[in-house]
Amino acid sequence: FIFAGALFGFVLARLQYLSIDGKFRTGSSPGEWFYLRGGHERIGITLHLATVLPAGLLLVFQFVPAIRHKALIFHRINGYVVVLLLLLSNAGALMIARHSFGGEFETQVYVGVLVIMTTVGAALAYYNIKRLQIDQHRAWMLRTWFYAGTIITLRIIMIISAQIISSAGGFYQAWPCAKISFLYEDDSTGFQNAYPQCFTANGTMDGWVAVKAKFADNTPQIATSLGVTFGSAGWLALVLHAIGVEIYLQMTPRESNRLRVVSYQRQLEAGFSHPGSSGLTADRLGDSDTWQPPLQNLADKGDARNGISQ
Image (tube, rainbow, N blue to C red):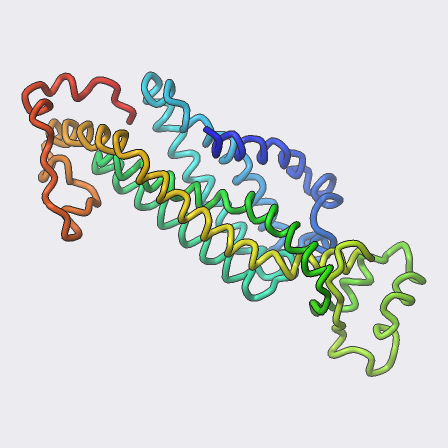
């Protein structure tokens, strides 16, 4: 519930960004609009925001026990919609990764890895639910959305890191003069005073200059402090979330075992081979001992079907 609540609050705060030419243009990181205002990156950011924000809102309903127990049809349909929106948002994220927060290489790799992890996680969750392996479906859906949730944590880490590197000094990022000029569009004198090398013969490297990372000075320097730290913040957040979801899964074995029994009953009724292990389970794919249903549930199948969540 804490995770779902944080995600819900974050999405609500970002819904205003659906106004691409309005709130997003003025509220995004300085310099982002230089690339996102047109071309395939404009399409990418529009696709990303128009899908990931609704997905975040609809996802909250998937965590409500009453819906999982009493509104199974809604849970299923909503789940399909959420996964479809997630995949579309991943496509949009890849389209804008080249220049997101400066487009540092570690940022691009982070975005690519996050897309792979969430796509594979969603695919495994889908496969397991089609095989009626509900315990593994739950596990992989939790993993998928915990991975996706790094976008919230990384922002906290990024702001803290930006303050640290600003105090430490010595951090720079390469910017094209055209992008700096875009930020100074109403202050050409300020642009010339702050970055005179853009106006000096042989003062740049192919039209690029080094911009210092400083969270409290001019706009390009603020953007640089965020761009330099975005990729590393994303990687750290991803590690924390990946560890956190595994800890959570290990701490909730009772729910996992309950859903394993429910899976056994449903797979048995559906005529699947290896009931209880028809999906991607450790006893079929690894060296785990063969899972056996509890004797009580073998004696009374009806009790096992009570409280089915999928």
